[in-house]
Image (cartoon, rainbow, N blue to C red; front, side, top):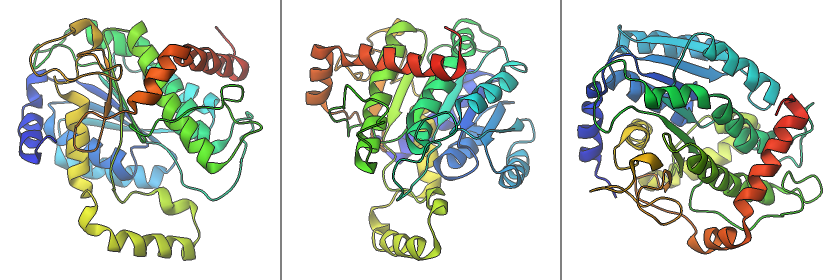
Length: 338
């Protein structure tokens, strides 16, 4: 466990990166995305932040508060229905028109539901799309900007070089076996299978990205117990029941502000360098069990996690390559291109 004091000391040093860091928060208008965006703005110098979400009214309120928190920062809202890959493409294009580089892509977009398979007009289950496909679409779309951030210096060289990092907050460490003949769960759908596939495919695809793009760090994180806005999908009775459970679990919950600080640490700490930086003192073991491999699985407190048995079996069966091929096939079938 990384102590909160160590987290706060690290975050206070982020101005050493220099000005003009660019961060994109997908799901940044509530929950962990919002709390991490606040921590980022508070601790960086003249940064540019994009909050990606659906709720423009909520975003406007947050932006005003962030501008008061750091008048030198530039904060913008990008409206996006992230369940639709075409909408993801439009959001990325909007950001790319303004930015040559992106230092941090931080993704928490998601939903809680009791429904069965609920397809979008693109033929994907809405929950699986939000938790997996749209996140990986953001990551792959913005790779040119992430790569440029890793290779171009426009300020002080701080901390561990040029920051280029992708963070997907879901449930790292809870990887399971997959329905390999039905990865998008057209015929084997259940909420449990949906959750298992989203978690495991996040880990496997990010590992493939780390191998293909060694100048960028890729992280899959487990958030711990944090009260977020995911309950908005439920009716009042269900929300009341969940709130009651959350109240009883309060001693084990991670405070909202602390969660943001800890996720900012994960998003910027030199303990998690890209593959190109390799091994070194204090560098964490990656998702393949090797130090500094560029893809990391983290718990809420910054410790390393991951279901080694499942991941080792995936390596033996080359499941990561299967997930990689499947995901690009989905992207091509819906959005076209190579």
